[in-house]
Amino acid sequence: MLRTLAAWAFTAVYWTAVFALYLATFRRLPPAFAQAAIRFWGRSALAITGVRLELANASTFEERAARVVVYNHTSALDMLWTAALCPPAPLAVGKKEVVWVPFVNLAWWAFGFIRVDRSNPIQAARSIEGVAESVLSDRRSYCLAPEGTRSLDGKLLPFKKGAFVVAIRSQAPVCAMVAEGAQPLLPKGCVVIRPGVIRVRFLPTFETRGLREGDARGLADRVRQAMADALSS
Image (cartoon, rainbow, N blue to C red; front, side, top):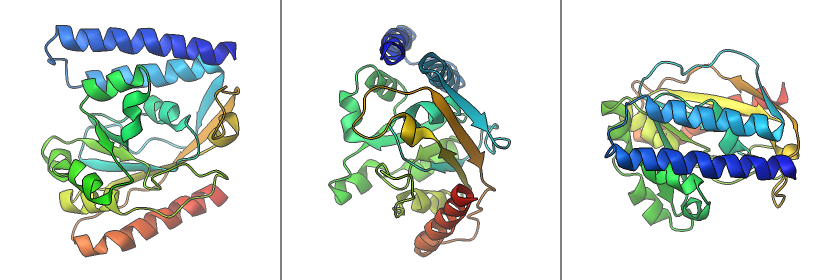
């Protein structure tokens, strides 16, 4: 409990300071600031809670480029370990309720991340209009969990195709990563983070050159199968 409270205290102080800096500089922070700030928060919060991140192989997205980054979603801890591995020029998407998460919502506002109402498919589609253009023109990394919600048993849920539509529209590659160990450290419904290890594996990149929007479901299925295979190996 003390570790979890310490992580929340750190989060409160850290993101309040980052948001104040963001306002003081009139939104003119260096392009690399978002990645550095998010990674520092994620890695520090994990260390405070006693959670260790182990990488099975090298990251596939260290250089700034247009890409779509997808990952499996099993725990609220996913916000921390994905933050610790944040790619350059991130563009994150989360459910609309993130606005009620204290201090984390400051980061969402400061970096212009996207909030989606998943209960309203039409509104959700409108909220990500222009994402493909931003990914391509600004060389941003669009990051999200295509399952859309947490898996209770660690098994992959069906994928929504929105991320893959964005990838195809921007002709950007899909970079997938899978994590094991997060769910037992913070199961759904729990608030106290347990110390432990989260292991992350980066999968080979999936190219989208030449694909059309009608291929989005097939691409989603291929990526999901590769992630499922990685989790079972």
